[in-house]
Image 1 (cartoon, rainbow, N blue to C red):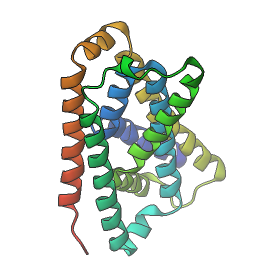
Image 2: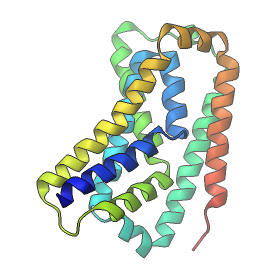
Image 3: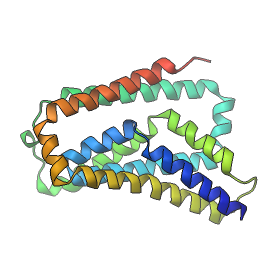
Amino acid sequence: MQELSALLGIAAAISIGAASPGPSFVMVARTAAASRSDGLGAALGMGLGGLVFALASLLGLHGLLLAAPSLFWMLQVAGGLYLAYLGVRIWRGAKTPLAAAPAPAKSDRATALRSLVLGVATQLSNPKTAIVYASVFAAFLPATTSLLFNLAIAGLVFAIEAGWYVLVALALSSTGPRTRYLRYKTWMDRAAGGVMVSLGVKLVLSSSHP
């Protein structure tokens, strides 16, 4: 009964976190509007990133960050710089038409894989997500857990993160949103790039050296 309550609590908290707007949503939304397969790849990457955070939390991430504040500061700065870098890349490519550099048909799987890797990197670049996971797990995990429970938690986290972003990718890669994206690509990409840069800068400026 205790494990079931913990499972439901963690599921609710992670679901709310996944649905909250942030760099992960921006990345998946923009990628999906350009290509459904790439959007789905990015969505699976978000799920894998969430799985990494879940496993790290189960292994004691919260205690590690408390014991080594310098490590958390470095994660904040590195994550913020990476988000800003992604934002600059999106901004600089805003005027490039999607049809200007078409990928060969046989490379569709490769571009989806690249989007998956980018999704994982984007998810892991936000140390605040790591803190959220660690705090949620610290709040809800029982004092002792079974291997089956830990596996269930890991699978549930992946399903929530990947499932939410798959829905986002499918919604934003449908005909209507895709047509609007192609029509206003330059401005939408610049807006997405600006959001990513601002999130990255805010993350770096909010970090305090221990």
